[in-house]
Length: 204
Ligand code: GRF
Image (cartoon, rainbow, N blue to C red; front, side, top):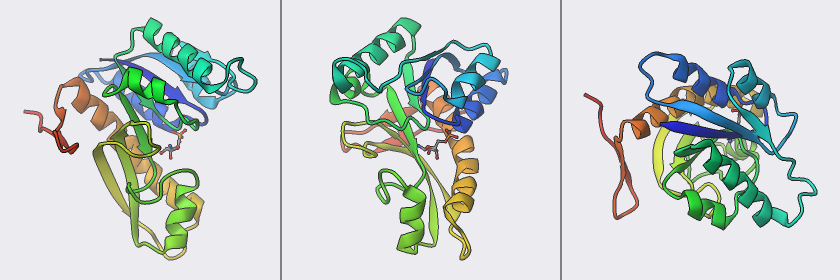
């Protein structure tokens, strides 16, 4: 399965996917890494791995979000990607972008959705006093951090956690489940029911 991975920052999830793709039996390859931030560390991670890396600054892009997202869509289409993976892409994608890639567009969010959508998920989690948190991989729909849930992983929230310590614990889980989900999609083991619930079938 050919992947386009979209990042805005550090790209540690991208790195986990790059590493997974290097293992012999992994059924996917990254054909494009794209960032809206020309100086994103994730672009360096891609180049270091010999993967095509492109960026388009969104600030001041003529025509606004729709035009920008159309340009991004074209880059993805040109790359031949079959699945678009948002990995810390800190930019709301437009409805037409979502429609174009619907069912082929996934995101990871550092909370147990539907709790704590949006920015500052860790701060929201700690402020709420919940004892468990985690991460969620889901298909993207126009509404932010919604969409059919494919996989989640759980971590405890510890009494002395701050956003950083909790975030690091969650990231370690993100790095596990994102490659697992990509593998499952590549192996055609993921299906969405009429009720919108996702089943991930076991590999055999
Ligand atoms: C992750 O916590 C991801 O869930 C969120 O943004 C963060 C990106 O981290 N959407 P990285 O760039 O993959 O290191």
